[in-house]
Length: 168
View 1 (cartoon, rainbow, N blue to C red):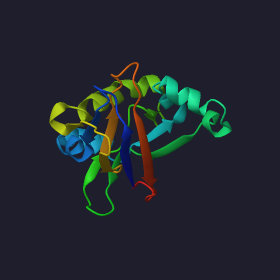
View 2: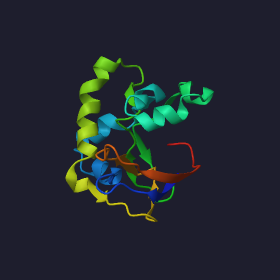
View 3: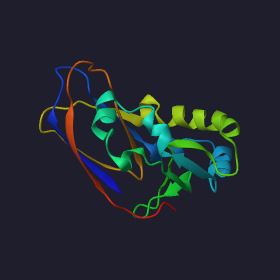
C-alpha cells in the first residue's frame, strides 16, 4: 500500500528521490490509449530490478538466499485505487518486462512510451533529503526513483513498507 522512508545519513550533495504521480500519467493519456490499456496485464520480474541495484545493495544481500530468488508477478497495467476510485498507471521501469501473452520485443515500444510518459516533469517532484527527513507515499499511485548521483558518499535510509490489497 505505502512506503515510509527516513534518512539516517545523507551525502553532502545528491541522493534526492524523484516521485511521479501515476494518476496524472493515466488521466492525461488519450481516450484511445486508455481503452487499449484497460484490461492489459503487466508481467513483472525481480531480475530486472537487479540490474539497477547499487554496489552496496549487492554486497549487503550477497550472502542471503532470499536475495537470489527470482519473483514473477502479474497485475493490471491500470489499477483502480480502492479508496479514491481513481485509475492510475501501474507499471514500473524497474520491474515490468512485458504484457501478458506478448513477448518482450512486442511489448517494448508501448512500455517504453509509458515509462517515459509517467515520469514527465509535469507529473513529478524532487525530494531533497536531510538527516531525519521522512517521506511517506502511496505505492498504488506514485512511483519513486532514487537519484544515484553521490558516488563515493553514503546514503543510509530506513524503510517500512505497508502491506496492501491485491491490485484491481
